[in-house]
Amino acid sequence: MPRMRAVDAAVAILAKEGATEAFGLPGAAINPFYDAMRRSGDIHHVLARHVEGASHMADGYSRAARGNIGICIGTSGPAGTDMITGLYAAWADSIPMLCITGQAPVAKLDKEDFQAVDIASIAAPVTKLAKTVLEASQVPGVFQRAFQLMRSGRPGPVLIDLPIDVQLTEIEFDPETYQPLPVERPEATREQVAKAIDMLLAAERPLIVAGGGIINAGAEAELVELAETLGVPVVPTLMGWGAIPDDHPLTAGMVGIQTSHRYGNATFLESDFVIGVGNRWANRHTGGLKTYTEGRTFVHVDIEPTQIGRVFAPDYGVVSDAGAFLRTALEVAAERKAAGRVPDYAAWAASAQERKRTLQRKTHFTEVPIKPQRVYEEMNKAFGRDTVYVTTIGLSQIAGAQLLHTYHPRHWINAGQAGPLGWTGPAALGVARALPEGDVVALSGDYDFQFMLEELAVGAQHHLPYVHVVVNNAYLGLIRQSQRAFDMDFHVSLAFDNINSAETEGYGVDHVKVAEALGCKAIRVKDPEDLGAAFAKAQAMTAEFRVPVVVEVILERVTNIAMGAELDGVNEFEDLAISAQDSPTAIALLD
Image: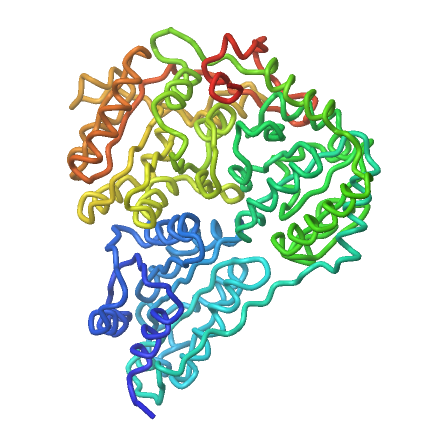
């Protein structure tokens, strides 16, 4: 039996599992692991500037790279605690990600040694497994189990903590005979699927809610085929956006109190039956549960048993992998259709399309400073159907989800549940690493952008090109809008007179100078008529220089974006119901 250090065995397992993309920072307690990566040559590593940034890069990589898992690596102590936000973001959105930390020697644990912290206990609530490995001989088994857990059931992150003496201890391990453990995913029975489909067919105005579990399962084609077989409209959730193209005739629009479409909410409120597949009934999707559920029958299909009934009790629940459910559902639907048991839902589907035609939000504003809606109109024109958008939270994300369009799975990369500020930039770097020839466009408000802007240097150093659109109103815009309820505007302004930059005109930070100082390219836009040319120039610069290119758009200071507390109570702030012919945003959607 070959003998090797435990870290060499761990790195060999990473290669065998296909997890060969790492993001992190070396340090004394994790240097043996870095030595093993150096010797192996199988792991590609990107040097981050902050360990939280590295965790978001690994997260973004996992979201974009179908079937692969990003790795975040750091040393002991604060490196592990810096990863917690990244672990939370991945855990909340069911994203597999492997975090590896160094640790003080086993004999020094519980002795308050330098940079020794019980990171496994800290990380436990936001991981599927968090373990400090105390015996070197357990390292292969722990890594093997970690990959099985990350891929089984509801996906999620794992943290493995390695004391430095455990890393260096020699063990017996044969990489040539290593095999991954089988992935465990529950599958609905045919009887369960048939009951769910028959409940749908008994309805007059049914909807399919398509969640992120469909994308995790790689079952987007099955979803579209099922919708077409039955003729039933589909509502994608924020995490399921892209499972069906926005311009598909059965796409009814997103539903919710923030990241939603007017036509999506209107169609949902007309429905009498909803089957949710691979979704969580997140509160930004449902709003008030009484409004959401009243007058409707619900079927809920989810891979995680504890999700069934967690938010509200469905009329029927099925524990199943989304792909397994949809494949069987296609068989059942085909049989029902052949037997003439599928009602004609053409009028119902047409009514959803009519709402899509008439309940658009206005985007074509010509004012200076620029209104944010115009930015998204121009982004829709400038960036093609294959664009991969990356964003996290704030008015920029909410307006982006309302006004941008997504046509493919994994092309809307969004930290939807945790929404940590600063996530966008590093996540976009991970996405750019996963899709080296992809058209990656990040979207941030100025506050999100400032949180971790040092990671731009990573993109410059490692040639990870993408376009980063920064909509700058020098405000914590979403918090300012929510402070309206308290009749205040308190500590949410980022504006100041920058003594070093006349260009910012009281908006404060000169993002163009900062981006250029970090080795990237940047463009500032103040006139809406210049947006299209700026986006085109940014795309050309990413191709020429192979670095991130920032497009900073100077917005009007205050814009209220549509949102509310109930699906039937979203505040539009002004009457923006217009026809598709008057909305450049809608033209591509409805052509």
